[in-house]
Image (cartoon, rainbow, N blue to C red; front, side):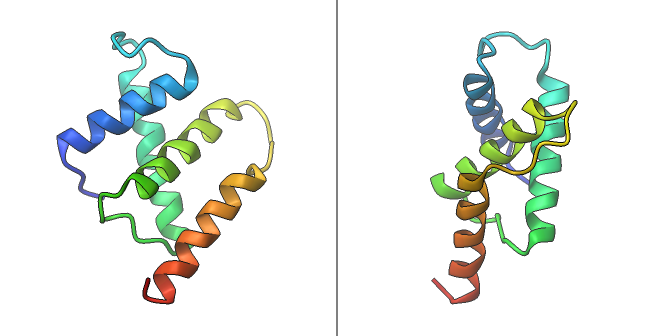
Length: 97
């Protein structure tokens, strides 16, 4: 997915905050970007369109990437709240709203 540099930077900052990583550190930037890209690809496979830059879309991307980061060494399933948000997004888009 082609995202603007501004959007990528914003998502990365939000992800760092969510994970408790200092926003000023660049140590994890490459890895965090990989998690964000993975999140976008997996959400697209679920059937959601994330091209529109909305706070809701961006929050779902960050929540998904955060979940993947936190559970990278486990087989923990997707949190119910994230599944609910993702399902709502997909259903809303399919219904045209």
